[in-house]
Image 1: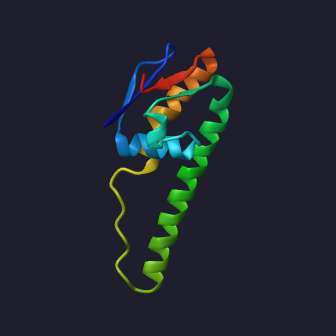
Image 2: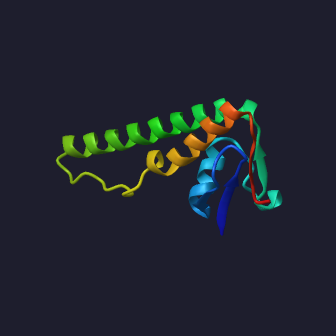
Length: 111
């Protein structure tokens, strides 16, 4: 399944299910089967959504740096992480949030 985010203020944004679900979970949107894969994000909620995504990115990067530092301190091979992190995956969505918030237009998905 894919998530297709739509708005009148930005081009459509398509994400694979796992990535879209992760972004929606971070911003506090329902991704349960009961939601039917549909939802809306209003302009007044977009500032909080951007803050939540930025916080999640910072947390992920700090945890990765700590894991590498710990492994090096213990003379172990540092762990490997996904080649594409949350920062890269969420950046298009964050940009969409900025544009839509500025324009005062909602973002919808699954419709």
